[in-house]
Image (tube, rainbow, N blue to C red):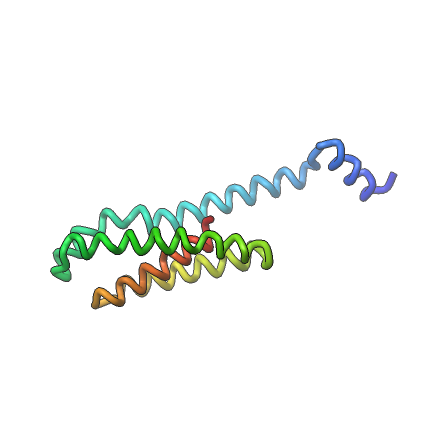
Length: 134
């Protein structure tokens, strides 16, 4: 029996070859790190930033609170688009692009001097998080 035939027979029998198992754990570990970095630096920092944004810009609490709403809206709207992209493109391309978009949004938010620019940054952050984590 050739190596390919043995692999097919093992796959049909429900057995997983050791290299595939290691690769699967590597993928899980990589995805966990990406989730930690992207979601951790975006969604989990929003509550920390609300008070400083109110004090720095003088915006109302209601106005600043729209930023997480925009983020979650883009995260939700981006999920089906990400799913479609994952069906048509390699996952590494989709996730890397999403992470780059989220990074661009974070950089944009750090440089924003107006409410409109901050909203635009959170649109990018939410879209990027959807593309790189979901």
